[in-house]
Image 1 (tube, rainbow, N blue to C red):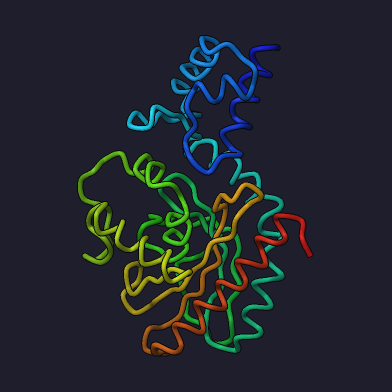
Image 2 (tube, rainbow, N blue to C red):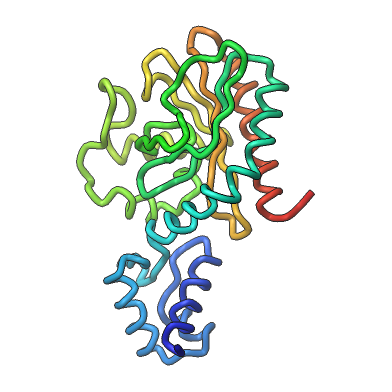
Length: 252
């Protein structure tokens, strides 16, 4: 029992930090012997709950932990919190768009909720569908807010990235550039990388610890909008994602 309590304490501490944490810091803040911390971390590494950042001599939560938490939120709380916001988003825009909620599951996004506007296009973003995160606006919105080391941990194979019909980033370097542009803009874009005729704008919602747990996306036909339209949709996705962040934090 004491070992289980200590392991949960380590996970809770790592979850509260935005970046990797040295073992010495974990030992100090939890009041544990450093040798015990290293033993716990070794087990957590073997079981896939923790990743090691050798350059930083530090540790962080793995994608497995995020996937477990995300699955619970997706099935019960997160979709329920987001659905009224998606309904309002589509109603206020009065445009032929599909609004959806996606969560990060490893290097993929999984669609958890969806609202289709009037005369909106048919898309692949049905509930439960998985797509490579780096190809989608919702995935890019969440990846852009992760520490660079965690993005690297999600893509351990540094070779060519998965693409569809020769569209989308082909390397981690190209993905890094897209994520930098996303952070600067405040929302993500995707133009024909999933389906050639369609585009998407997306923005990430954060949990209490500032972790990107979900993203709001808007998908539409590329021929139906221009530069001003992109800004309108991106800003709308950003406002809705901020509203979901407030709900997750328990604010009005």
